[in-house]
Length: 140
Image (tube, rainbow, N blue to C red; front, side, top):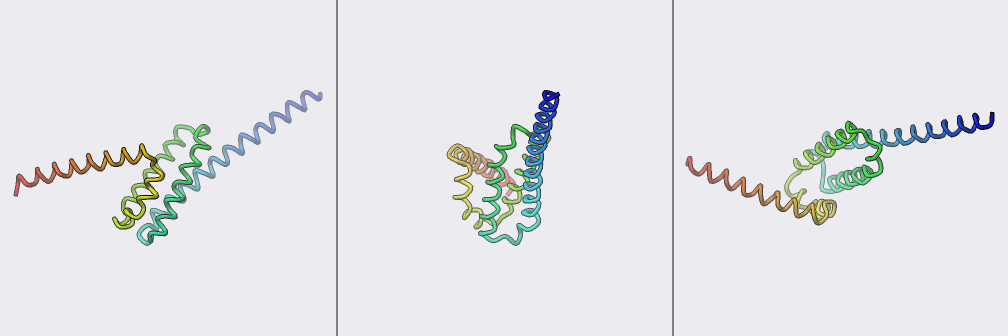
């Protein structure tokens, strides 16, 4: 009889622990989505300080992702990727002066490899823009 009670207790504790993990993961995902929606709604009124705050929040969500990643389904991971893309797309609409002031924040987030990749992307993008300009010059 005692073994039966012990097994039931262990099973109950395990189920509570699992439910708690899923609840924390779900709360993280909901908070991330609400944050992105808020930025998408309010970004036109953001000052430099607002953008710094939003980028710090974004970085915090990115760091929290490591905690929950193993517990996520492929659908959960796809949803997080969508939140990231939506935030970065909204950030790209910020005025150039604000983005240039955010460069130290963005650079520290990307690390050295990310900065190299970003520089290469910028160089490649510059080449494409130059090619388009050359092509348009043919018609002038």
